[in-house]
Length: 497
Image 1 (spheres, one colour):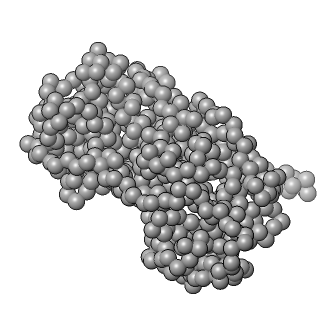
Image 2 (cartoon, rainbow, N blue to C red):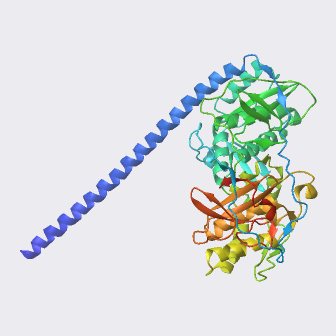
Image 3 (cartoon, one colour):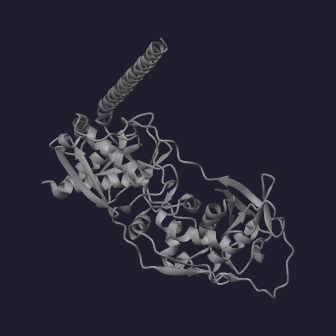
């Protein structure tokens, strides 16, 4: 009897367990079906919205374009710099510590969150790929696949009616997977807005240069470039000058030395200029009310690792701490990208992360050298490294023009100046010591200040009731809390990072 009861209980257990498994499997299938249904609904909504927008936009840009004044690119602020770095004289009389007066406080704005105007990117099954075009972008191989045999268009002219007709033609479904492919590469390579826009352009121009039209396909390439960016949510326009089309890209931040047109209180930058003199004609309509200005900020590490090409290795050593010597090289493809990048306000360079390869060479040694030290002593070690491991020249001496550096560039070029050192020092202190740093912008100099909670000596600024100790990477051999004598009573603009 007991055995029979046990068998019944065990049978019941397995029956319940099997039922539970079947129920769980059914639940998973149901949830998967619901998720797929949701995805298809969202996809359909995206497609309907975009189809409507493209149709309306084609009609709008078919109307007569207006002549818009173009402006020469803004010149970067000219600031006098000390020709030589200032070396602290240990015999000079001690000046009592001061509280540096603050002119104003600014904070670097974060890039806007991207609002997608396209369906979430997926992948094309290989058996559905019917054509492909490719190009190398700063060493990275980019391949764009399509499920159509040919996606080319041919412009009969560049008047308004023809541009509207061609936009409708691009909207016939031929560009769906092409746009998705571009978005896949944007996510895979961690491209910021501006770099993504340039990458799309290179592929579009390369695609038409391979076609029978050759260079004659430049106008078609511009139209394709604008179409792809518009579908990806960017605020773009097309301009006509003489017999050429030009891409106009709205950029959120100020960039220098790049010509632009002003439309509705917004600057649209001419991405690539060529041809002779002439007037620009364009439209004022936006593709979508959700279209966003492009940002030049680089908040994630751009991945160009397909064919990374390292520069010649150099040794960077602190003079006060000779054991702090680091051999480093950088990716020359990344250096080419940075060299081609439009000049921004220099505080934006401070927000750009260092490349992973350089961080892996630099940060472990710095952490080892500063490990077990107090925060103020560790800050002093990093300060001396930045002060003495790099040769100094002004931008004018080295390049003949103003040129702020991204942090990787200090390890590539032979010389750097005060703003470059301040940006590098602020980055290293944040990454190695996890301390808060601000930039101090004087009328003709850039330094930093570090929040050292248990340190209350030396020159400082007071920010939000907190003490930030001055650290000047260009005041050679000066320790923490020592501002250059000539700036002790000069108002500084504080930039929060």
